[in-house]
Image 1 (cartoon, helix red, strand yellow):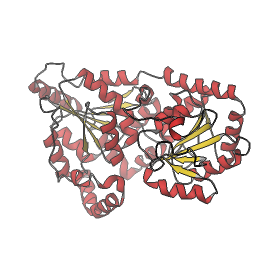
Image 2 (cartoon, one colour; image 1 turned 90 degrees about the horizontal axis):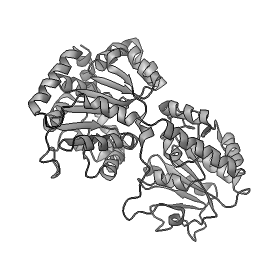
Image 3 (tube, helix red, strand yellow; image 1 turned 90 degrees about the vertical axis):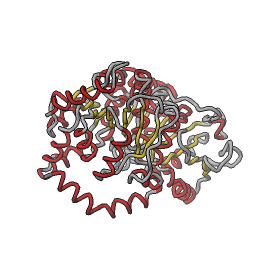
Length: 450
């Protein structure tokens, strides 16, 4: 009954869905594949591999989070084909950059039954892993019917999502979906309890921690240079990096920078919009405030050298995590704007003080740990941002203590990757197990769920 209602509604709104996806540049390229209009391509590396593990990550953030787990799966199952699906173009680029030679990329099918069935029949997965509560009813139902285990990894439930899914008209449907999932590996006890309250069987819910703590130190790719010198800055100049920013936040950050510049003439700012297609808009806003600005993508080898530019718009992919290393202090976006926050650990891993706004629902546990350890600080508005930056820039010793505390938070909370991989291993055959044995194992798991 619920699936009939869901699929009827999906068909009804499908013209709107297609219009929205076509309107978004980062979603447009993969649309034919998401509609099942392109045949599955098996890479030369995967042609001789047995079985397939399908890992679904939505976009850049989820790919970054799950990449170490994918590498661990490749280490444990070198004979198995690994496919990582995403929704966006930034996700595709992240897979191809971070998991080259480890996994193949596919665009995730839209959740229409015929498209989902076609995708599953082509991939023939032996296991489906999905990241951070990306629930699609028809995918989960089709996998269940084929006795394919599905595992949620690094799962989380924001307060907004939790409250919405508790509504009477939604809760029964959500409970039905949750019971299609073989195992839920959640980031925190809060997330695990919320899943149980929404109807997940307690025996299928585990708290394994946040695998983002297990991210390796970012490495510079061949030929790439990400440093102050590469931007055209001297060692004397101080760099503030504001990453993954959204509309409204950039204004507050630039205003704060303008207030601080007279007191700290060597201070420079890098703004990295979450969606780089907004770079021109951000550049125009900075120019309107009377500041000289450069763009990373159009500024040559050292975009700030000899230009007088005091602000750089980072409109390239894959450089932000490395550039945090060059900062004296970092601000992570999606937190002053009511988005829910992005990856607070990217600057923390380099030992940098982390500033963020009050809207951290997507990263609440990490934010709380950073604040408690005094490695991070909540800035509630533009004025608070000015005050915190001024205090830190005036006190190099405080900068160092705060950065070291942030780095300790990362080190003290690692281990989720191995815990998650060990649980996933229980749903996969030992090396050398035949495909028929795997099918039997899937049937056994399915009967346990029923």
